[in-house]
Image (cartoon, rainbow, N blue to C red; front, side, top):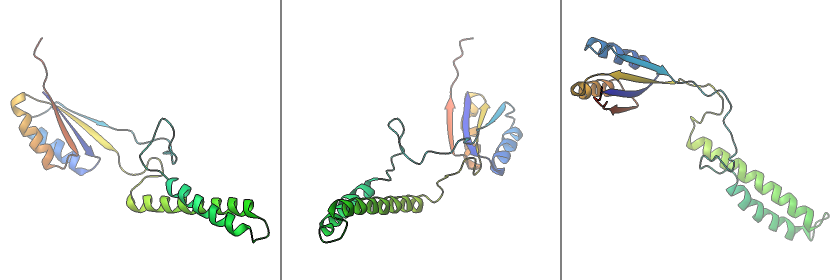
Length: 156
């Protein structure tokens, strides 16, 4: 059986490995995951979306401010078309900034820069099926992020 676990790169990982070796599980393989090397995309594309939209409120406010600007433009010097465009631009920027601030407040740990923070490590432990529960309990005691067990076929 193979037991897979993910850990944050911390001292708990080292403690878990030490405990597993202490219990006699010597077939342990640790694989550190690479950190992001490119900057995350701020804007969604047709093929990739994170579910957060930064333009919804911007478009809504652009319509409202363009109508107000166009209606006020009849009495102002530049006319309704220019004031409608100015109102649309102002409303869009205001909505975009509002959405961006709300997303940043909702998720303050949002990483906008590449390579920040600690990476994760995948731990693979080979053991007998009857020892799987013990290995899993040890991993959970040392704050693993997740555990998966895979039973191997005995067709050899």
